[in-house]
Length: 215
Ligand code: ADE
Image 1 (cartoon, rainbow, N blue to C red):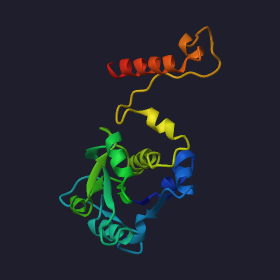
Image 2: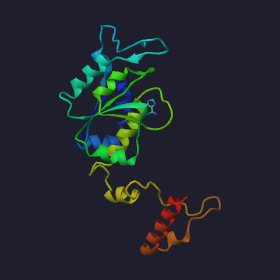
Image 3: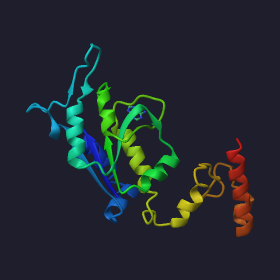
Image 4: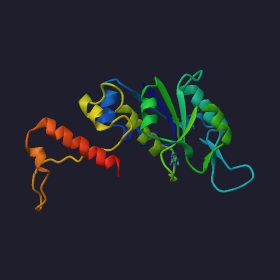
């Protein structure tokens, strides 16, 4: 999978994806993530990519000509699935992560400041939000999305079972897990887990997952 990120802070993307599973996914060649500096497509030698809103108002707006040029440069002919990050976009969830993980190429366009020129929407396929709150830019949402999709690419997680067991499709409820010490500050763990009866343990775990999802 090829992922391009258009951002004013490419280091933020590179840094955050250089650990743990996202790092392994790239090292093992399952995905190649490249963060591009949006100022590369600036309209002038000062590196301007944004401007004040027509009609007045606070903040600066990402320019449509800059966004179009950047998108065209990293996704010539528009073959990738293009995503822009915005709090008023489609709510990201596990189902969307699974859909994205099957794409051959993805582009994420991160805005900053007060937002995007509305015409930019015509150059992307989807506007996505990671939740009903406002962040300072699209970089953290992009990182959340990339992290969640890289781990879904077959072969990325060493232990395939942990992916299959982790969820029932998009049911995110988990059974409680414990490790040593088996008594901590007087609090023990469920006896069943110490019996070694794998079938009974599996039944117990299923019951715990069910009761969690009925909450
Ligand atoms: N940009 C700012 N806030 C955001 C959010 N919650 N989701 C996606 N992009 C954003």
